[in-house]
Image 1 (cartoon, rainbow, N blue to C red):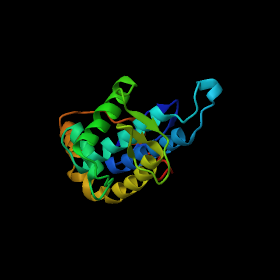
Image 2: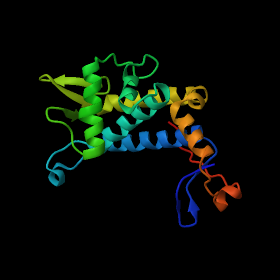
Image 3: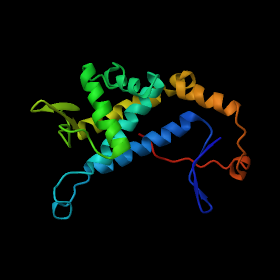
Length: 200
């Protein structure tokens, strides 16, 4: 059984498989990313207009990283080659662009809450490019990235029963579980299963 932390006596979710947990976690990440990207800040309060771009970008890049870890495997940098996978993002980016997304956006935002110099974020247009160039500098457009991510997550979850059991994360967790004895919580022993109704 896989569990999420409880709040008082209310237990948010117990999952019987990695697939069940992924369905909930990816759905939650998409919903919160959408909230961030569709929200409009008050320029009087923030000093500029726009959306909650930084957390929105972190969530979408985390989804990319996650799906890449199951489909592509390897180290974290290699996960981002999923952006060119024809069955998923299919962005046809060159190696330099993928490295910019990984280094200048994903790594800096995730670990330092900043981006590299001469890269930018934009809300973008629904039918626009995910990664664009403004004066030769890369610009990550969040709205088309979100729209594409929804399709990619749905496709991944549809393929999950086939992909997850053979994936690197699944193998790592199984190996760790074999050598670790975690005590079962009373809720698991009572087989009380609560699941979210959220779907991508």
